[in-house]
Image 1 (tube, helix red, strand yellow):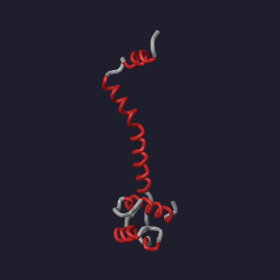
Image 2: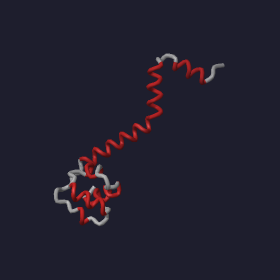
Image 3: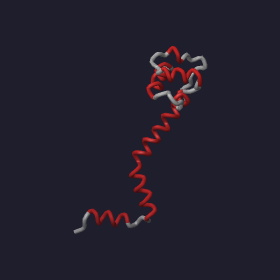
Image 4: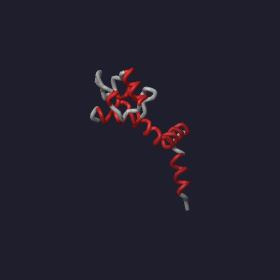
Length: 102
């Protein structure tokens, strides 16, 4: 009587060690890689959301004071650029997205 483990072992024996290692790594890190890809896709979307040159950041009271000051002085062209400014938090980005209609 064969065990399931013996059947799996026999099936895997047809593959070389490098292929098995690649498969193992892919399986182990699939969730992490998917999550990182989702983050890249989100950043790409944020790069497409433009901010007008005359956007009045000081008028948006729900932005943090630091974010208002930095955004007003740096004047990012997109939400993606704004998200990379030190002192502009994810919640500030959410507020900006609401104000630009996204």
